[in-house]
Every structure is written in structure tokens, then in C-alpha cells.
Length: 153
Image 1 (cartoon, one colour):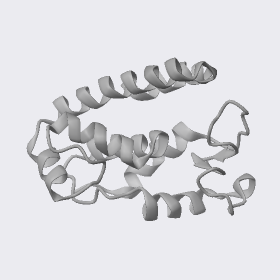
Image 2: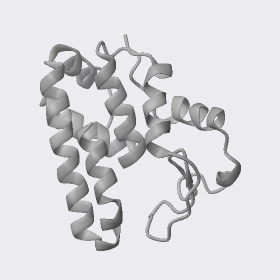
Image 3: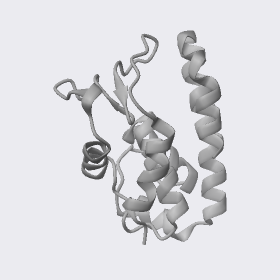
């Protein structure tokens, strides 16, 4: 079974510290926690432990996934592109109804599919999603290199 404490390390490393980039739709961001999503939170002074609490409470749903690497990838995707988007991509990868909600059907399909095939599909779909976002909003192009590196990891 997947372990949150293992999955969160790569997410925090990918997200990094405090930034306030005018081209980032999330606004002020630290550890991937954005002012847009958490307007009452003091983003600049957010601690890693506070970020972990938010991720465990609002993003982590994957305790029963049998493959830790898939759970790691899903948590990272949820943080970077939003829970609904990440879940829709994994639902597409495992060929279940796509509704953006993580439930028993999605989980069973993940646990019954080839981990390598799921990861390959998630990487590909993430690249497509990021390129589509940049196409729709060229200001996001500055994030392209980082997003694509993250997508294929």
C-alpha cells in the first residue's frame, strides 16, 4: 500500500520555496500551496509541516494504491495541475469513466493495470496538458521546461 510520507518528499522538492511570479495563475506560492487556492493563508511564512498537512488533508487519497511510484506520481500531478485534472488523466489512462473524482472504480483499475503502462500514459498525457496550457496562455511558456521535466519524471 502507498505511503504519504514517501510520496510527499518528491512533491516538496519539485515545488520548492516561496515565489511570487506575476505569470503564475496561482499567485504567491510556496511548496506548491498557492494564495489563489488558500487566500487566508500566510503563504510566505508557510512551513513544510503546514504544507504536508494541507497535502494530506486535501490532495492525498491514495493509501490503497498498491504501487508507490504511481501514488507518488498522482500526488505530484494533483499538486501541480489540480486534483480533478490529475484524476481525469489517470482515469483516461486506466480506461474508466472520466469524472475527475477518485473512487473505488478508479482505484481498482489502477491496482489491476500494469504500473509501467499507467506511468507511461500519465507522462504522455501530462506533456500534452502542459503544452495545451501554454498554447492557450503563452505567458506560461516560462514554466515549460520545468513542467515537461516533471511530466516525464
